[in-house]
Image: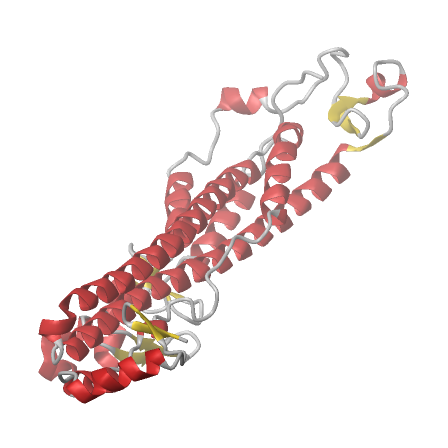
Length: 363
């Protein structure tokens, strides 16, 4: 079914939608639109990074004495929206995760705000009627459920859709637009969860690096007293820790890349869906919304991506105890002649002796 351009929504309705969106993009501190970078707090509220730094500095009793170091050391402050306590690590406010979704929405909002709201008179005249190409005098007013396309009453009575099931165009438009809105909401919620998972993965990477560093230092300290004898063994164990650290980092970073790719694809899909929501023509919207909604449904139904198991960052299996080894090394001595004679007598009597295999004893 071919048809011309249709009516655009009233300018007042479009402006109201943009105003409501703008209200959601206002920082509670500076009362202006969020300024990049936008950080997300553990309570899921957002702040400009500069505003987060100002709140942290104002809440820190040592800020005036520490000066600029307040931004790069740990501390805490309360969220200005819900009073939830935010605990910062040694990176300060720079350790808070950026909310890329909000930043992308801000970019889309600014692009949409720059578009002219009033169509030209010629465009208005062209968009006043949505007529059927096959029946020039008939308006597009129904939707063929069987063929999934907008059509006119004459096509239903006498044309290609006379045996099809149809419904009013307005009701199908409202229903599918509601479904697409619900799909966008589900996708946005999934993106928020994905952002939290990515933050967790990044914390795991930092913990693995820190735990690996501590374990290697512990190994070095333990081998200092036995350095001349156990130097080669120390290198092997340090390399074992490094290999395990690298293996875990590769695994978690691989998961991080997969989660990041999934999030990036989901964000792009949100942008496409939002742009589809702005399509003023019901028929044109119904033509393109089907593919967008299918992609959203497929993305929402996608199986959960693999995540690192709890405690995966632990490197505790590399702890060693050198007390017994040190005692053995301190008690190393020459074998006496009497001990050798006793060993020979035991062999002659046919008694089983433990076999020495390298540094292990086999019985």
